[in-house]
Length: 73
Image 1 (cartoon, rainbow, N blue to C red):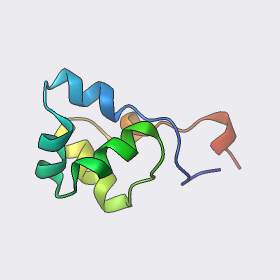
Image 2 (cartoon, rainbow, N blue to C red):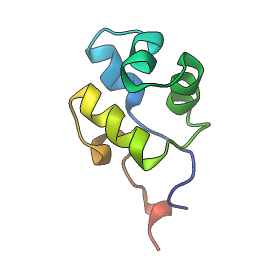
Image 3 (cartoon, rainbow, N blue to C red):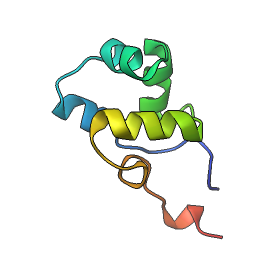
Image 4 (cartoon, rainbow, N blue to C red):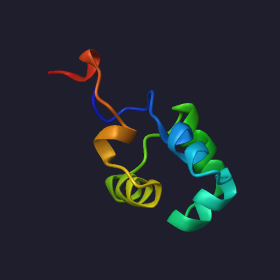
């Protein structure tokens, strides 16, 4: 279902930039634990946070949080 926690590419993009979870959290204004939970797919970020993550990681929300067949109506 769309908008629920699931797979994402946050860790992949973060590692490409060689920044820690704590550094990413600081840059986007959330705790390291929020980044950990997002990367694990346990937490679905708000639209605002998803946009901040995408901008900080140099990509788009669509690339960070790709939809799957299960997300289709």
